[in-house]
Image 1 (tube, rainbow, N blue to C red):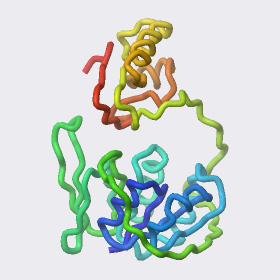
Image 2 (cartoon, helix red, strand yellow):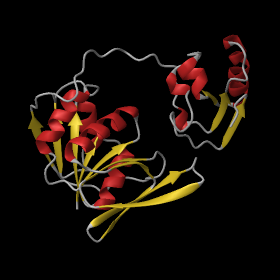
Image 3 (cartoon, rainbow, N blue to C red):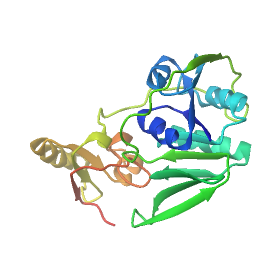
Length: 244
């Protein structure tokens, strides 16, 4: 089978290599560099990687002939995946933890019910999918490939009105070995200093539940942990003031 990686990173490239021959849709020099040596073809587009309209337009130009579209798990990838899955009439499988080819179908597994069970999904190509972080480790096979330059028109189905810098707390919870996560049990924003002090003493990072980031906006979204936030796998996770 032939897999096309969009928003390329190491884990998406490793996952795609399980399915067969790998190509990459790369917007900007950083994505070209990430895919270098891991794809038989790199479709290179000059532009802002955050411009989903440009990325969708490029994808629709080259989509024919690919059995799977593989992406890392991110908000941008899920938005992109939803649009192109609808356009192609293809299934969209989110946060796969394993991949395989069974005959003429693609098999994927993913966690369900709050990671308490595993669902097994099988679908005929084309399939759009994202891969869960931390599940496709190692390095992708080395491949000698070519670079093809594209000059696509932005898709009419997704219009980028403006691109604004995102406020960031400067944390990467995906890499943290210790996380102190705060919830609505903290009655005031100032009380979060207790969580930060504890995390600092333990050499960890501070996470939070959805209400703290999305509703109260006491912390930026890069602190948000959960099914709708960051997927994390620390060695120690302390949930303080969080119900459920």
